[in-house]
Image (cartoon, rainbow, N blue to C red; front, side, top):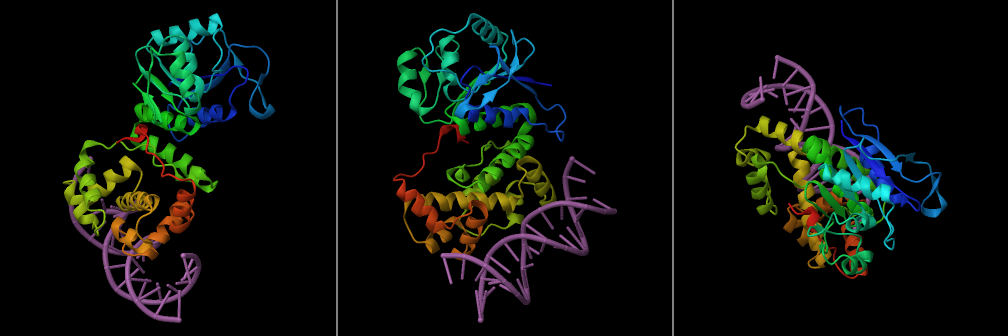
Length: 324
DNA sequence: GCCCCCCGCCGCCACC
DNA sequence: ATGGTGGCGGCGGGGG
């Protein structure tokens, strides 16, 4: 069992802490060997958090009992790091254990020199300050996260979830990572707002599917029969269905629709063509079908999605943390 | 543009 | 483990 420590101090960022807890701290009896997670602090007494919330975390003096450390945030203007924390985090890293930072958490790792010569990122609003303070760190722009298997930095709150999902994939495989991701994404969808437009966090694909998926993407605008999809993967139809489900936790058809939706969204964001044209381009036979799936997945109509994108000026950037 | 209804087809999965 | 089958439900298409 991997033991997780989420390290907080006074002025703990509530949202980032919540993201870490959601990923690693929820009981998930359906998975054996799920993480055991503590929110820990080196300070005494209740900690202040966002919006006047107070927290009681587990007081510790060392981190030896843990295997994975999460820094959900850290003051960006704090040059002095308490000796106990510096020693504990350095020794944690020296043992080859994994450390993840969310948002401003990268400042702690950089202060300790753990990121020297490595790639790192942080929330965009701290980017200039970070680059100036740590020129020896290779700052990466416009990514959701960077992760080398040992040290990870994520750009902001929601990107911390993407990084966490990647770590869960490392530990528990695609299937579990997709299930966890799916649950997070689905609840995000229901709350509305921009968060409903997040993309599927786990996009890695096992080798046995790459050919078939590439073929499907290339011919997305034409009808794709599941029998030929299976044939492209060189599997019997039954095996294809079974492996597809266990790998992506999606049926082949559901995957196809999600890819067609992604294509349609890209065209809507670019603002070119009418709905019928976009429906044809993305492989939905007609506008009605596109609208149906669009509403089903995103809760709004294609036209109002386009309007929202236009009003914010520019289309969303794809971050390399989502690169395939 | 959106939401019904109906119908025919086919994708999916329990079962073998 | 893989592969075949049948039933069912969901999807696309057409009409209102």
